[in-house]
Length: 337
Image 1 (cartoon, rainbow, N blue to C red):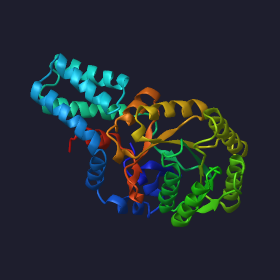
Image 2 (cartoon, one colour):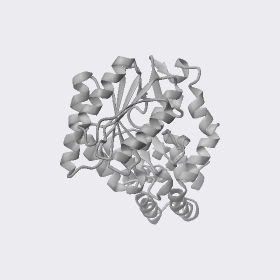
Image 3 (cartoon, rainbow, N blue to C red):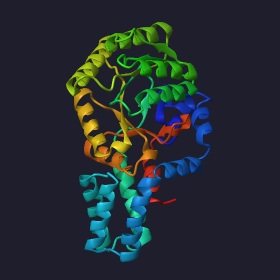
Image 4 (spheres, rainbow, N blue to C red):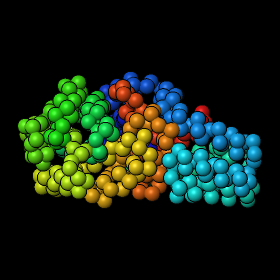
């Protein structure tokens, strides 16, 4: 599973580490070591972990397995937005193994809980294939999730691999989003395509792909609108943008990433289901994990929808967007080193 930027991307049939000697510069410079990444992730999930750790300590270590133990553990996981269905599966498995003597003692139970959570978070293909020329990445999500910032940060990290990038401002309904994305393009060293105010988003996507083909760019990242007059309007607009893209490149968009704000909890699950049904979603970017006690939502989405979380956002800094690693996430969630 992806652990670092060089592992997340597939370039020319291999991981990015094999394709560019500078591939380490982005992720390596950001956090330094795996230990550094783990500390930052633990801090970001602090509020969720605090809520969970007290219950885990009380139930698995102090009380020992009992009917009340499993109920309290279920309540703690549901409170963290792991989801009722996901929680039931995890607790049922843990209870069964404790009952048949497979595991015993608080330490072993806690370790097994971490393993089960990591297994659930590990679903689908968590990598991003950049071998198509150009690769078209479509970003979707409601306003306020950090979509435009994610587009800019993603462009930066792809540029760090030596790939050329075109950023397309197809959220033509918000002038601020266009300006913000243009600033990110300058910072990332990416080309930038925009239209006039209130331009048709499909036309911006069309122009961006045409520019990428003309200039031989490797990747096109298209930022889209997150709010229109109605939900149906938004989905129709996204579907239209997809059609424009596929009319130019039949197999594109090659990657559709949905940006979900972790602080919205179960509403994030509903968003993921809605967007997946409307436009298809290849992976999630879960943002604002540092601002919520509901950090278990990644598990609910992975388990109920089978959509892999590919990236997480744990702060405002450039290095705070990073590839998702299920085992590290589960350990940080439960509070294990």
